[in-house]
Length: 378
Image (cartoon, rainbow, N blue to C red):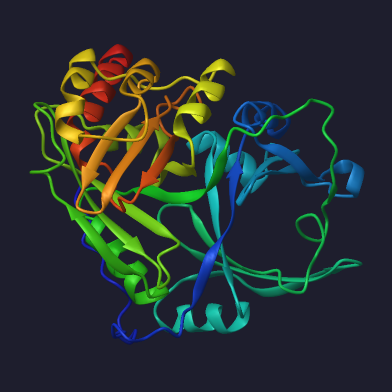
């Protein structure tokens, strides 16, 4: 199915110099899940410590929600008590997945109003939330599928997360895995919709396109996809947007759309300063990673050249490497984090490179196709 939507008529174009929508950084990512307490156990195996909670014990009769943190990464996992709740319906349709991409702004009301002028669909108007720790401001607009963009200003709030949440102590010891910050977050959209959402991020949020990969770059013998990467003004937030391309068999993007029942966040990439140590810790905790054939590692030193890390460790752990004019990067991808072949995670270490591992695409996607074939979905 090819969609031909265009941005709302009457919205004003923006120039390259227009910076009236100022997005500072990622604030948090909220997952809507079937069982939040069990999700906490999974994330704790990635080194995330529960730091705040909202639920029946705090007077919240609608949902249970846990805030997990590791360095600058803040994830929220939320599940509803009522099977008829919007959260439950979302999980029934999509499985566990990202509902809200929350970004820090200086002025929630001004940002929200400006994005509406630019054609955004408002979902939750600016509101303030107060308790003894101060005041937090938040608003939401619609993004691809049922995902929302949430604007947050917590400059006048010093509580554990936001009003309605209380500090939480976790009985299980959680050892950090060295994950430091969110590097980028990838969205999968339908065939024909990539350029629409590229334009939306530019027009509505003031993001710029920094990379474009077409199906001549991202392809295997059987499938292909296209991707464009959008970044905010200070470059701290990057959103690659993927759509499927014509191929002999079903692409990983099509598989995601089939099982997520629509567009959504495909994966979250997290930065580490020592990928060898991080991946070893996560593997020992039972986290499953994709593997590429050994032939990839036989050719790697000649393709990448001298690096600080041990090629033996890289091959043992299944880590991928790529080099560009600015340096090199190391990356690895988990298998899907639930039974549906949808959301997964990426661990990435940058040694100068600001790219996304284009030299690894073919080997990576061939390994994904092996997984698809095992599921009967290739």
